[in-house]
Amino acid sequence: MQKQRGACTNPESSLHRYASLIEADARSTARDIWGRINEPNLTQNIRPTHSRATAVLHKNSQHAVHSILLRKI
Image (cartoon, rainbow, N blue to C red; front, side, top):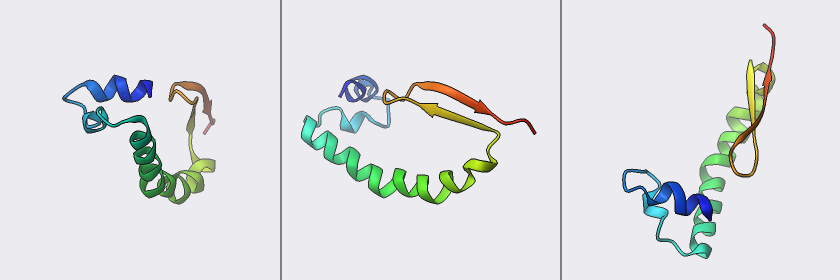
């Protein structure tokens, strides 16, 4: 919920519309967005090309990059 209270509070942010959601609605909305947008993108675009990537960024649960894998070409 910290992310919701951070970026979402900026009126210029595209996420601002989520700032006033109660926690249950925010979680439900996040699950919906994951299922409709992020998960299909992961399975259809990211995973199939992972082995060809020259750089892979791994993020932690707070979305901070915690490791970078570079491939020599």
